[in-house]
Amino acid sequence: MLPSPDPGPRHSLLPFLADHHLPYLVPAIFYWVISFVFHYIDTRGLFSRYKLHTSAEDLTKNRASRKDVIKFALIQQAAQCTLGYLMADDSEQFVSPEYATASWAQRFRYMRAIIVRSLQYMSNLWPWTGYGTKGSGNASPAAVWQDALGDLLGNTTQGLDTSRIDPAPFTPQEVMFAKAMYWVLVPSFQYIAAMVLADTFQYFTHRAFHVNKWLYKHVHAMHHDIYVPFAYGAFYNHPLETIPIDGIGFPYCLSIAGLDNRQAALFGAIWTFKTVVDHCGYDFPYNPCNIVCPNSVLFHDLHHQTWGMKYNFSVYGSFWDWVMGTSWSPYDSRAQAKYRRGKATAEVVAAKARLRAQESQPAVGASTAYWVSISTIPQLARSFQAEHMRDNDQDIQESLKASEKILSP
Image (tube, rainbow, N blue to C red; front, side, top):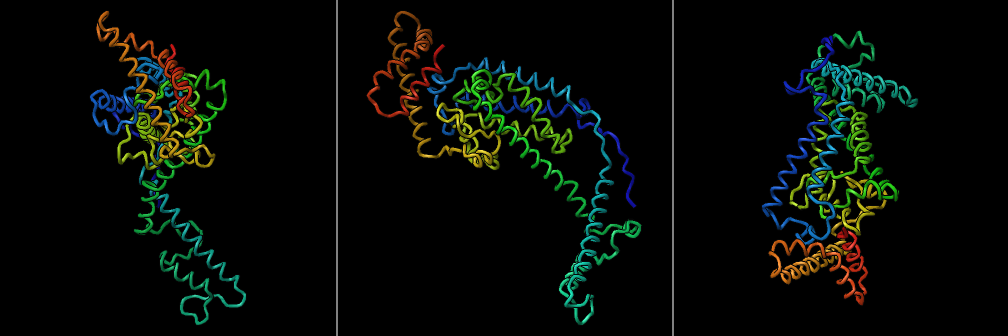
């Protein structure tokens, strides 16, 4: 007999916090912990050989200050937490693990009976041979398979009469199957379904924000004020993008996949890790994010460049970019050439700013002169472009024009 299901709420994972608050609080906390780690690495100059962009690029390309990024990231998380609080499901009901595993063992027993009975029926469809059983001299192939599977599955031939199946104790094979289903296979399927749903939702909404000119200009362009990504810039988004996508759509994807509150919190933490790492600006070896998206950091970094915004829309995987023809490998020769030219342009503009700082140093302090010279970078970019108008390399001219636009006040 099956044990009593005893349905009811589950004890909270943390004694001071109900489980239904975990899906929106855990990712938010995880975001700042990971961001702080990368910020420490960045400010201390650690692992510089893995850094994707130079300090000159950071100075001349990004339009958003780090202070503004932190401010809007906190605003986004406040909106997400508010929506998470309002949408939190505090009515989750669970059965006991003993009942759940026993139910899977019962299903396995039914499945065995269906297989054996189906094989019996199939053997009767062979008109040129008689129905065979063990010991018969003229057994049909289906009958042989029935006998073999009967031995493998425990020789269950009762059919589907529950009164004849339930009373028997579960075999070790049934218990093993039930535990594997309850603890491993079903949760794995739920996480895979959540990943597929969320990645599909994110790809097409992200691409829509690029394709629609109004949405890009008034909403999504804010995120692309960061051309040289850094960790906590991952959540630098406009509220009109944050609320429908991250605050409403993403939680519904997890709900459709059947994740409970604890599973949603873990999935959100993994998702947040992937998002922050993709914006960290470091291409570390053995990056676990490469499992779902090869060259994960470089893949998304290309999308943040002025010349790569029409490619690599996927936020988590790369499947939809591959299917829709919007994938561009960061190791492509053309992409690598554009990266090199962008770095060269940034170095020249920054060098001219430093030279102007040195020229004005007698009048003001060195530090003050340097920062005053930074305000002249748009003019330097224009003069540098004029000096190279004879150059037929379209990529350099595009990079210079983009630099001027980015650096304009």
